[in-house]
Length: 173
Ligand SMILES: [Zn+2]
Image (cartoon, rainbow, N blue to C red):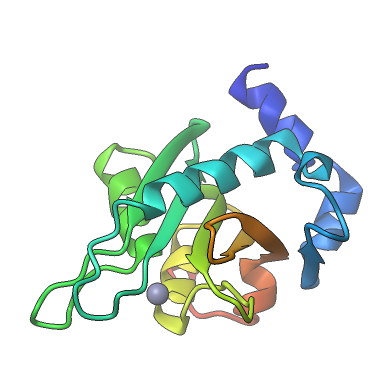
C-alpha cells in the first residue's frame, strides 16, 4: 500500500471522517482493538510511540513523541528536547521543525504519544497555534496515552479545528 492509498485508508476523502473531525472521541483499547483504527492512524501512532524514546527531558522527566504526516505524504518525527534555559522544544514543535526543514509545506495529520495514566494526551496551547498555522485544512490529531509498560491503552481522536476554534493565523494577516 503506497502512502496515497494509506491516506485514503485514513478516510481523508471520506465524508464520515470529516464529520468525525468536528468532535472529540476517546477510545480505550479495551473498547476497541488497535487493528480497528485506519492503517495510517496505526502507523502514525506507532512512530510517535517509537520516537518518544529519544526525548531529552532532564528537567520535566516527561517524554513526548510526535509524528506528522506532511504534504508529500512523508512522515516527520520529533520528540521533546529540553534545555536549561527552559526554552526547549515540545515534541510537536520538534516534528514541525523537522517537516519544515525538509521542505514539506503542511501537516496532513499528527499523532502525539505520552505516558499518561489520566489520558488527555493533547497538544498544549502554544503547539495548537503552530499546528493550526501549518495545517492543510482541518488536521486530524491522534492522542496516544501509554501505560506504565509503554503500551497504548487509550486513543483520543479529534482535530485542530475542534481544539482551536475560530483561530487566528497567517491567513488573517
Ligand atoms: Zn506544546
